[in-house]
Image (cartoon, chains in turn purple, blue):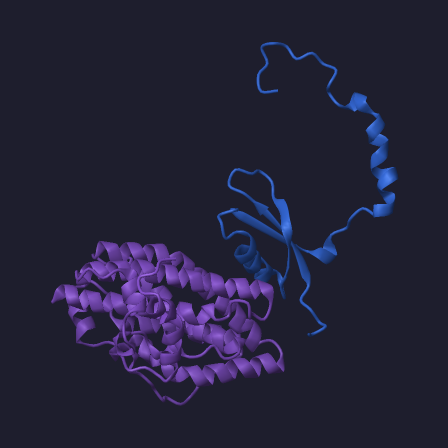
Length: 251
Length: 95
């Protein structure tokens, strides 16, 4: 039971990384400027790298002989446990940056907390990933500030992205019995703890960017239980195509 | 395409063993902070460095190609400025 709770927990982490990595990868060759094209795909590769380590660990916990490729490429949509935020389409550059910013502001305190976990392998993955995540947050924060405090159009696009994505942010702090089991064993942090830090980061960056936190409190969730938005199926058909068309192929 | 492009920046990187920053290339960025971040992403993906300098290209003053003769050629004929006329004693290594 304990192993299966941890398996589920690690799977959620890896799915968030994989799906967001896949989304960012869609920018490859389409970035607004060459330098940013490279920056976005760098972040994508960091996330996919994290996903590989996390899937390896998840596969080990599961003990059914699956490997990271099978977990990443050969599950059905309702078996993916990522939050809805990460599967949302790239939209314009503002939408991509804001989505990434909301995610980075969540991932950084989560990794920092997981570095203290008594689950050694999880703590090691967190310690390795925390440095690149800190850079991702720095990069996206810089962009949010420049867009918000930039031209009229960049401000308006950034605010539109915030207004659209805000409804998906609450799900980042989703908790269920699975999390409570692990929290009781002090293996993982409580989400309230992470949410406080997330809110502090978001508030200070948006303030500097002269952008506003939406007043409406409309909340979407379902991703953590495998109920995804319509966009997920299209994403998975791209992501899984090679493994489905050429089973067991290796790069 | 937009005509108001971001300014061009020259990138200098100091490698782990290197003592000085070396010019590695250039890139575009809206300001110095993002120029450093872009330089990190474009030029240090394979652990090339531990320190980056960026300088806006507009701030670099260079010699004129037409001045090459007066600037550099005079030294070509002054071979006595090269320390090649000394006998190196046998005991000296690493010369």
